[in-house]
Length: 141
Image (cartoon, rainbow, N blue to C red; front, side, top):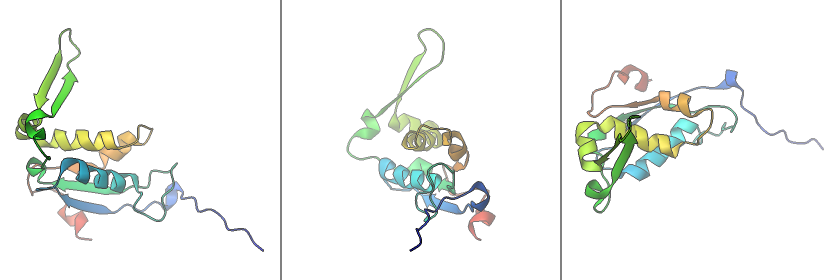
């Protein structure tokens, strides 16, 4: 009787697809978990943990993403400028109106595992606040 070999994907065997995700009216946390799964490649039967076999993801309508309950007024984003006393903060409602791409990128970044593939996975994430994007030809294949 012959043993079954465990499948291990190699870098040469990676095939990347393009996915379009319209986040209009969708809840931020629910949709970012799905996007993180696509970037990691866990939706594929060829998933191998030590190989970055994820896909490209194009997010449209980032400015129309929803949050539940009163998080639009209470969810606060913090960052530091690097200067003394440089701790800045902004609530979700203001952040979405000023820079909706940053909200989506930050949410997806925090959903990804903190390892050597995080930077390359985020590079495959394309976020747009409206419906127009330059990747239409790649999505139609």
